Image: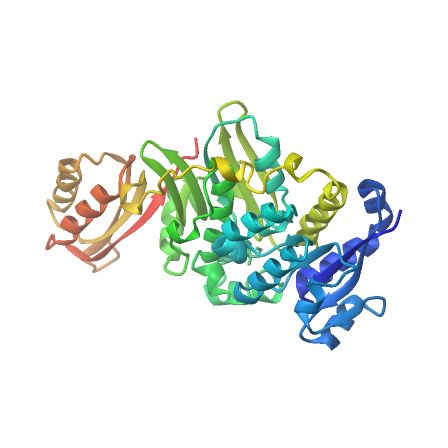
Length: 436
Ligand code: HSE
């Protein structure tokens, strides 16, 4: 049978990885897909760079709109990243009746609802395994493998760069800047690495996962997002002493009054498998009512791990493009007309546990004052740590772990604690999840 013809937009790290994997494994991929999958056309603004990546056998064009509408092409592989141009190109490809494979989480986080609706109307597929979790087949697992389950929560290390930075700081004593430079050199970081460090990339991915898990629209704008930029080594060390490790987690949880959607540094028990997920590795833990907890772990970024997910999508589309669109798996697992409008909760209404560090004067009654305020707010303390003050110092840090409480209550209590004369500066607050 004739090969299926792919146009690639972009000539960066993932494009190169995809070309290498498709070329190296072409015979086995064809046996799985039923046809050879062939990159015949590349759209790139820098043709010389594209030629270096793809070699002499492909046509290269700099007019990306001509590429997505080329009559020979059946699948457009969008790997240019960004939102604006990528959105226009993807919508144009869909309008031209092309199937789309994309690794672009920012695109789907911002415009996924529009893109999936357009694809549904046109009867084409938009596949996006590589958008979340790099090489981990998490979209497939969540959308299809767990389809029997009512899911209650998921929590994931879904940004490889920030996990790489936290791991290098904690275990190798590297500075934040050195660790980030290394992640950039290895091709893990986003074009704008603040997306990684500020939690934005994780929030993009989380909003896609939550849509699939709960049958809601993609709602990146409603995701609470806090990055790792303000984390201090001493909090990582104190967490270790208390039996926890700090990870940047994306958490989506079905609560009584809505859905929690949040990305922030989180203490998790050191004994959990997730705590030992280091470096660029991603891990996603999902709780379903039938299956219980399942954990998915693997390379979250990098050329060939991401290519692994891209090629899996190319094979899926090759297998299914002749199927009746009505019988394909819906893009977001639930049929578009069956999505629900469950509200996303504000961070004030989230309920979790907390790590609290206070700089205090080391004098009688300080602890009593602090614990009285917490008790009055019905916030229960689960663990406590205080070190001897350093020599000739009249100050020290006290660290408290709370049981579960509503965030607005904790914030109000902290504001009252910070008013105490014996408490110096601002409290450090990091959320804590037992992941039980
Ligand atoms: N910058 C992303 C990360 C790449 O570090 O996880 C994969 O999406």
